Image (cartoon, rainbow, N blue to C red; front, side, top):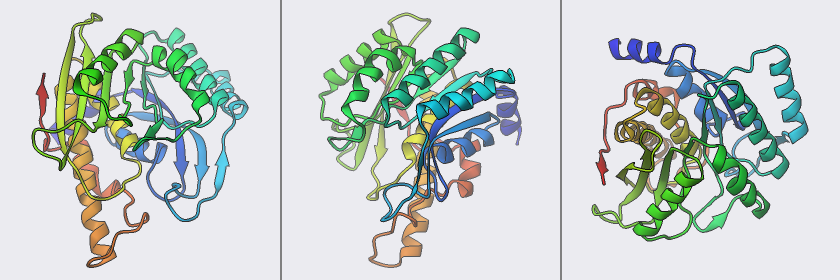
Length: 306
């Protein structure tokens, strides 16, 4: 309880604008990010880039997509009431180029009002060698989003050698972000092929001298949705608490993920029954049940400083 009280004091009056997808049922986008951030004491204002019945991994889904004009109207309402003061902006999956342009315009305006604002960008572009988003978004990410971002959490959806990955992280640093965390890669883990490798890099004191870390994360044989959104939200939270200790921030972030995933797969297998593969509904993240682990995660994955 003492730790939780101290954490909440540290996060007091810290406000996040989160622009991500929303689902009625389940945990993805804002549903995956808001609850954990609120549990840790953040105020979270959400703009839903899409509103769907459920994530698109189900057999059926219905819903609406917010346009750039509709995003502008919502932001104007906040602005007219003079309640557009934020400490963080968090963004995730976007499919539309005009919407993405508008998001960056809003981030830049908020940064002019508060130069200390931190923009955390989870650029959901693709995975397993396939693009999720139209290719016309790539130049916007390269020329506008990455330069505006302070923390960026790309996944690696193409096979790169270790040296190339570090070159990519250094290139991203040179474009703007102080903190780069590659959330999963196909790099070989010294612990064997049952582990994913995550890599992090952080500028120190605004210089190009960086702290670089590697984490070996146990693989789970199931498809989870919303874990990337949870990762970005937790990285926001724990870098706020440990701004100069990327190792600690990443250990807490990844450990939260591991606890949530373990609880989810245990539940899903139990409900599905013996020798049956769990359904997307059964694999929805057990977020509420993981509240204690989100607040005070036991470290189950250690980062190695490189």
